[in-house]
Length: 89
Image (cartoon, rainbow, N blue to C red; front, side):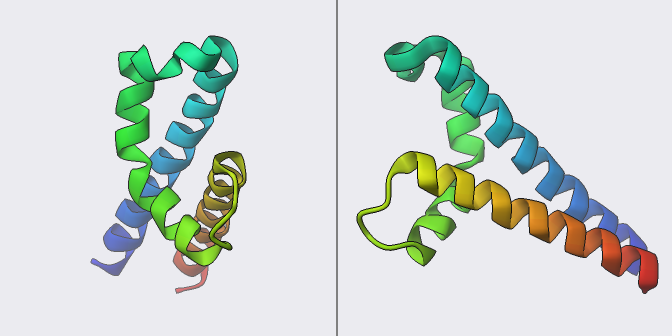
């Protein structure tokens, strides 16, 4: 049961990380028109929680790009930590 929970959490973290990467690619491709893109809006909705968490950890005047990179780094370390936990638990 524990392995399943760790695997499920790891899959959710991985999905959020891939959504952040997809959002970054759409940011580069569509530029200022990204907010009219429905795929970008969906990815924005899915990644809102980790970005808000990271925004609370960073100083108040941090840019949105720094918040997105920070949240990706946090998710990457969380994903690696869950992989380590699953291997050695």
